[in-house]
Length: 78
Image 1 (spheres, rainbow, N blue to C red):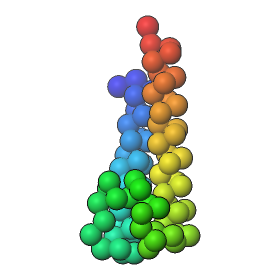
Image 2: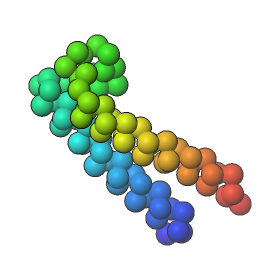
Image 3: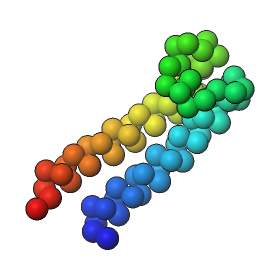
């Protein structure tokens, strides 16, 4: 596995853990929410919670880094 692939794998693991954290917190605030529900937090006033917004923001940051790395990898691939 190349260094680039191992970095992407690490960030994918981070993403999976953060997704689980975001879902668990959302479901504590409003039981029964799905991942699709969480993609539309404005539909659920219960998600207007600073801790949830923080964790969701971390997830967005991780996903942004992952997209940037994948894009860069495609640019430099032979």
